[in-house]
Image (cartoon, rainbow over the protein chains, first blue to last red):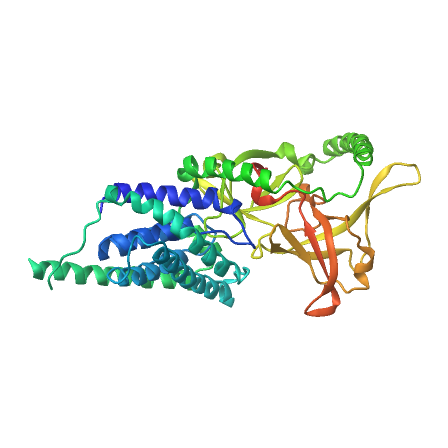
Length: 165
Length: 289
């Protein structure tokens, strides 16, 4: 994977999430562009770069939000682990794949966010339904955004992992 | 070759597992305030993307959802009130200047806008919380805890400040520290001058107000009897000793709804809304002195 292209994608995704997402609000939640970038990386890249790339995207999002450090990094690590495990069994270009991955990883991220918000010792209070609505919005946006990103996947030079253990 | 590859893969898995464990421990043991102290502020680095995206989003939002005027008064009434307030303000400023001469220790009192510095908003919160990012930094003198205002009232406080940006937690964020305020109303006095009258509610004049998300705050500690004095359109102003003296009396918002609390019908739920959607603000002023 070309890391410079990855960083450009991360830069744009985080910038859009901070700049545009607050205006795309529906029922108090907005789509998560960074999670879509995580899915794109995890569905195409080899295992190790994909896991590392997803974790770093989460860490950057943590730095750009007022959530505690590590919430998104951990969530996206889990999301990438799930997405990578489906690499061999899904059709990567199909919109239904994008929708399903957006929904499942969105829900897993929502569960972590809700657990974080519910921890009484952290004194974080946030509406509990917001992350789940965000998961639905992310899933709806996934076919469009991932469809566009898939057109540019050659630029990332993802290589299929061919290792013999 | 395959052995080396397998070794490196195993090593990577150990490193990744360790990173995930660290992230989990950090997320569930450090409060957002504490982790904010440990993390660098990098908002400004993303401004080339987030600021134009923000402007675009603001423009689209303004087209699709034009802001409703929640003020029930006519334009003429507002103009009359403004004129009256200008006169009252000039008189008070003159008195204040005289008082400042008498008491040098209180020379920070006065028009709070003169004590503040304006910054462009470079983006919102990347994690769905109610916060704003601004281009200022600790190099400009920004510090954690500094209050932030706009022309229409309070915005919030700086909760994270670094060399490459700062974050403001909005007063409407449910995790923002609750504050005390008092209700008031503009009324025409006997001398036909419009004046701001503080409402006496129950035993104490001040009420606890907390962020409720969706650009609103809520007061839910008043009984229905006490809340009868509050009407739609009344103004809530700051009366909290945790905030600077020059911000006392600063506008928080207006009452937009009053109803019994669903979970406790003997108490009222009074919803307050700032005069603008705080997430949509283009620029804000940080009270730096």
